Amino acid sequence: MAYHTRSNSFPSRPHPIIQEVDDHLCRLRSSEATSTSSSSVSHKLSDLHDLHDCVDRLLQLPLTQQALAQEQHQKWANELLDGSIRLLDVCSVAKDALSQAKECIQDLQSIIRRRHGDESAVLTSEARKYLTSRKTVKKVLHKALENMKSTANRSTFSSVHKEEVTIVSKLRDVEAITVSVFESVLSFISGPKSRPSSWSLVSKIVQSKKVACELEANVNEFAEVDAALKSLKSAHNQLNNLESCIQDQEEGLESLFRQLIKTRVSLLNILNH
Image 1 (spheres, helix red, strand yellow):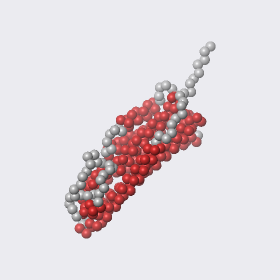
Image 2: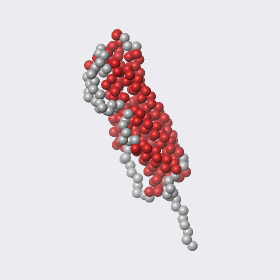
Image 3: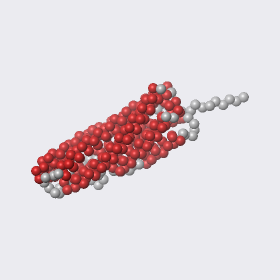
Image 4: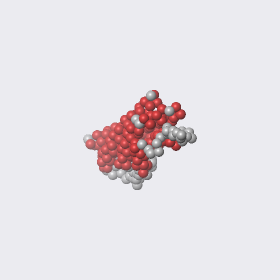
């Protein structure tokens, strides 16, 4: 008599939630080549939130919890847990950078709105404060980008049957695409590299109605404000535009941050079960 043993590996047909994760990954990968405009970044953050919401549902599946709880797979689970804290750290860096920029922008807007002839020195001081803040933020963002790239692919899976790592490899794909989106976010906030400017131009923004400035072909809102501060006439409109963009990014990052925490808690619950 022939006996058939039931395989403990994952079924050949993926679970619907796994397929949903694949769909989200495909959508985000297809958007990687798009521009780093504010609308594009906001869209990526929204898609990334949906992906991590799907991941959290994937982590609630018994087959996922069984896979990650297995002793031979706990190393991978711990790596995913380490990755989750790195993603939260980068998300925090981006949130802090936006918050700092927003504060400086609101100070500038307030002074421009009530501008009088005797407030030239104050406006110049706030403009200098903003540009100095931008310089500091860029250094922080560049360091965060370098750290993220250096740690993103530092570990690999052992050689095992493909079916046994379906869930884990999918979660690693999620981590990789999340890193890619964060690179877009940090690059957007940092803005493209521009020629160094003299502080004398900053001091003249309150004395001249028009200062010649050279904008790059594909600037984003941050780069536009950096240049617009040399021309008071356009600075106010550009500041309003940038504040609106920052608001969208802050909301997207805050929502994503909460979802990343939720995912990390789910991973911790699995490992501590």
